[in-house]
Length: 60
Picture 1 (spheres, rainbow, N blue to C red):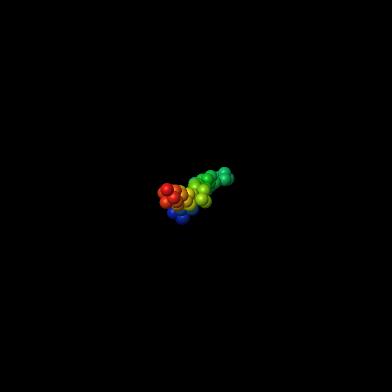
Picture 2: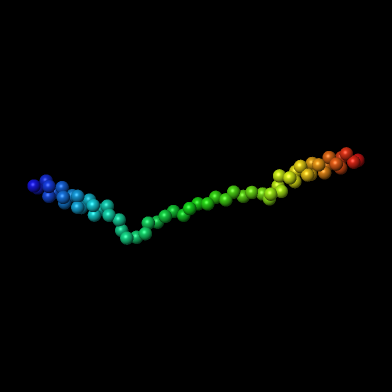
């Protein structure tokens, strides 16, 4: 009988020891990584410059 009472006492003490409080849980803010991209015409400038240089070289 003593063991049963002792087990009940330990169970009651353990359940209140791990109980949480009424404070709201702190959530970590979400990290948003935005990739910076160039302008949409970024890939066309180099070929246009090459065509202009070839046209200038061919005309002379």
